[in-house]
Length: 282
Image (tube, rainbow, N blue to C red; front, side):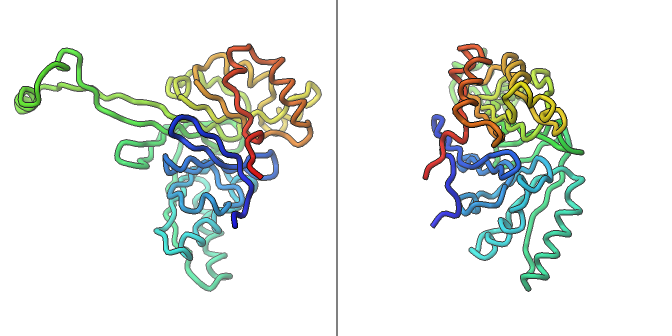
């Protein structure tokens, strides 16, 4: 029996599952990419995913790390990989060591520390690029990028043997191509992410928009979260085909959030919006 009722979204061949309510839990998994953005309380449905990309250390995003690692070991799976801001690795190791002593068994883990500008390889042609956010010290976001080589137009009509011959001559017949698939902002106050082309061009944007009511703008600023006014300004600068909103406050009813979104966004942007918690399967 699943441990959680999770949201389920299908975009082309990609499935997005998870749960995200501010202060309660945030976990967003994409099984086809083999990544889970943050881990929340580690719902059973994400344990088989090999790579957890942790944005920051707050409890509602990170509490399930050790359960995720331990349950993989219990099920005979390889050690899970947790990619996290490098400043968090020491505390995470201490937590794993403490739970290993409590459990009576060593909990295997592959911990990878990253900072803004780093890349981590997920699969042979799939990477995640790390960028800075403004939430807690060292907090980051992630863009998953497919890297390909594309043949130059002037060589596109050549036969296989002709291409082989050019390669023997040391002629460069292709060029690198990056396809940003999904960007996950995690928790963050407003940042002009339009300065980063791979975020602008990501097919899918998974972004927090925590607060919606006018009187909650102070709460947004204090907690380093985004208010609807900032969110609306941000996405007008981006070109994402699909925008998934996470980390909604419990202070505002969902019917009001839907109304405020429609009022705050242009029709062109509003039609791209998916409220993650509208997609819960019960």
